[in-house]
Length: 127
Image (tube, rainbow, N blue to C red; front, side, top):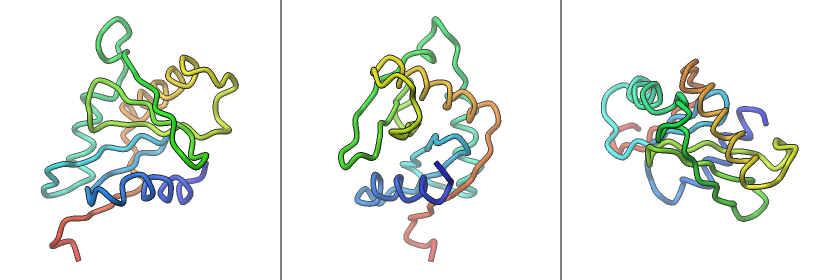
C-alpha cells in the first residue's frame, strides 16, 4: 500500500478521535495522547523503545483487530499507542496468527528504521 493510501486509512481510523499521530514507513502509527514539541521526534522515541520485537518478552505479544469496510487489520502490541496496519492484500495466510506475526514484523522494521512518512498534527494551535 502506498503512503498516500495508508495515510487515508489512518485518517478514517483516527479522525473521530481528534488525536495527533505519526505514521512510519511500514504502516506503524504512534498515537500521541499528549503531543508536545516535535511530534516526529516524540513518536520516534516511543517507537524506538516499544517497536523492536524481542521474542519471549511482552514485545513479542500482539492482538489482531479486524477493521470494518475492508480496511484490513490493526495489530497491537505492548504499548497501547503503537499500532500497525495490515492491508487485505498483504498476508498470504489470512489467519489471525499470520496477520499478527506479519504486523509485528512490520512494527519491528519501523521500530528499528524509524522512518517517518507522515505527521498528523491535530493540536489546536497547529493551524
